[in-house]
Image 1: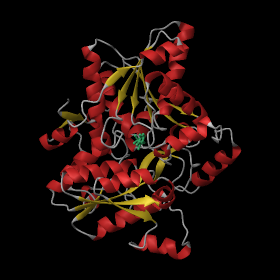
Image 2: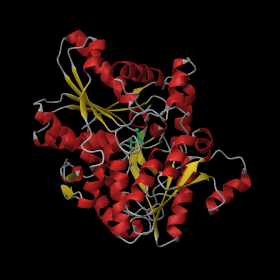
Image 3: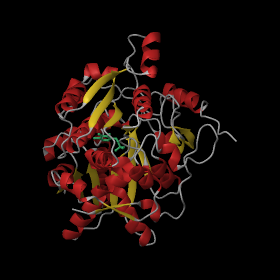
Image 4: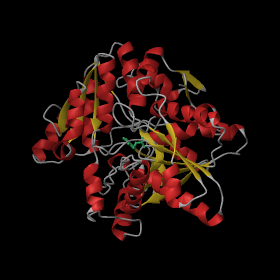
Length: 446
Ligand SMILES: *Cc1c(COP(=O)(O)O)cnc(C)c1O
């Protein structure tokens, strides 16, 4: 197991544009982040050191499931009749069933070490809340999660997992915060939104000096922690003397994709650009990289965060309720957005239909039901492998299978029963709502 995380910021040819304070238009400093995050995480957020040692206490928890397995998808290859070799790094073996504990555990550790007693966060379907509740249990922290009301009601299993790990779950809107009470006053039956849940979790953390807030994607320190995935994959591939030609990963906020690919990008930059093609895959109904604008925007719907330069569909764009809930984000990590703008990575959008077809094929061949999110990467891997059938090329394809789908079975049910609704960029309705949201991008003061 690797003992260091890798910081891509140390090796980039150009630095990404800094986050800006929405009031002044000036770059956000560590002091602006101090009320929400402990000093160690703020330091990692702005660090340009190439490597950060993984604390021994964090390594001990990682060892519950790490190193995660790297599998070759022999049976999928056979079903496709491809000469390509397909490998997948499986993060579904973690306590939460996804890659999210890779950052939840160090975040809980650094908070506990700083004397913080409670962490707050938001969760949609519940992947992040589950990971953070598990991590808090490891370091004796309380964990309070605001879960979007619609998911709280419709998808009880992850809520039950959070509570089993010792976390407390509030449906959002709740009557525990100003933001929640205001929403309940105007709409007592509000289904909630991720943006509102963020507002509630941040409000509680900002008011109590012993409480901090934790975010599960997008930020630099989150992507840093996830690089344990790519570092392991490099070591595992070296053991079998295999060199990767194409890496595909799904992108919501960019953390599993960054975690897998950054160590490979380090090698590629050091080799003067010789190395694998690196490709992000996103939902056709929420195409922030392929159709969004690269501009300063808020990270949340309510407009409370710093302004982040990122590929965005507009902070108040509400994507269709697709099953890959983890990919339903209007923006993209500033670091991933910068790599895309610099031409260091590629991007593709895929429809739900194509993704679930790949997910079902994967389940029937490899025996793992993937989470809806990584079916996007699998669909792109299948495309690449089928292209090799035509060209006869023996490409080596690597993907992150970033979670299992055992708590997402209703999504498979919808696919198998033919009731899955699909949207593509060709839909003028989607284009119009993106154009409208982009017309409301915030102005930069000063
Ligand atoms: C949260 C989540 C995602 C999306 O987040 P990223 O930061 O883009 O990785 C993707 N897959 C799974 C399984 C998730 O839980």
